[in-house]
Length: 94
Image 1 (cartoon, rainbow, N blue to C red):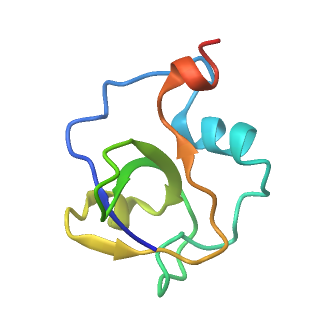
Image 2 (spheres, rainbow, N blue to C red):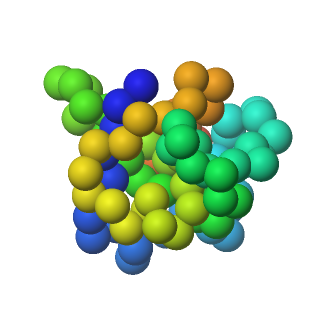
């Protein structure tokens, strides 16, 4: 699946402590050993805000390394990673 980073989201917060913790809690997956970008072997360090490269305008959280979190270009994700809604009213803000 292809996604793109959303710029200017660093001030967004949730009750989980961090966006990576948010992803861990709501994905129901173990934190992957590697960044969710398909060819990256670095460790995931952040829960990144992304949008699908499609007509879906929803925001999602995925675990990425710091390097891929800085890229604005389209990223190809591993198939196994869950996209967790970044909309806290659907998750930790209930």
